Length: 385
Image (tube, rainbow, N blue to C red; front, side):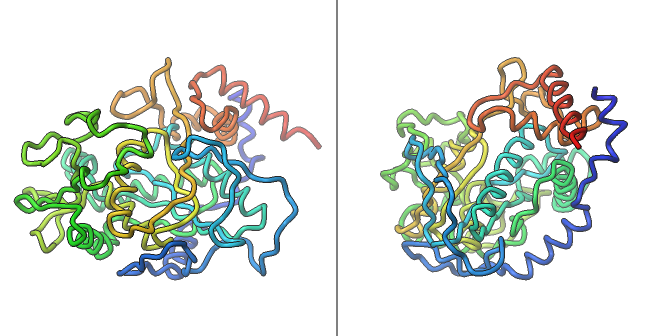
């Protein structure tokens, strides 16, 4: 059946061209001008233009939407902070290689949520970032002899092509770390001023002991966080779980000037700064894969609350892993298949259906049998007159 799907691919026309995505990105960037200084308020009014269905919002008659909230560990009825509007931030890829189907599951999952919220009549501001400043990008660029930022931008474009193949709508904004250094620097300064961070030889670390609610999202106790387990070992840190907000420049690496010397931001501060720049400190939905619960999203909460004590995200939503032989699919384990590899064998809609065939929070095991089954179903759907 996969052969038939390859043959019939022209019948399944994809309405979104790469050019459309590029134009959309530029249009949204011109509409969404992130603020340099973000006001700390208790609720989010989404002052930037909300992209979604047009016209005046009227309360639609529909069944209640329930979401499994990671932070409360409960299924909750969705209630937006601002009537008729939704702010949603989903952590994007670290762009240093072609994306694998574990990434595809994240963005197909949140594409469905985005589409459904729009279907219900909400004006949705959907922000999905690109990480284009990171250790992995720098290492890959050195390996290939390329400029890290250029390499990352190339893979950002490849990612957008993959999203087109998978019929994922473009988000309202796609901020990149390298374009938001002023916001990142301002946030770090504020965290230091508020007493939650300290400086060591040009590096800036967040002090987790200063934030009593650390571990609320993941359920981890502070004493359980040992150095070397997803947190870098550094004897200069006051606590093993302290994490970097700013890293001093190393020879041959990209850097930006800062009050603490040349360097680049840590991974976690990037999303806190960009989500605040586009949605404020309080918004409706923050999402990503289950692997981001700790430390990434845990650290995001700590950083944002350290800047604004009214910071609040209503719903933390996380999807389950794609597994191979019961192990999480990941580049670090070398057990991954890129989106391109899979859609060379199966139609993109077969992959999308496969990823949606299991509850979004449950793990889904990759297998040729499952994809063949999804291919059969897609084929017969398109035969229905």
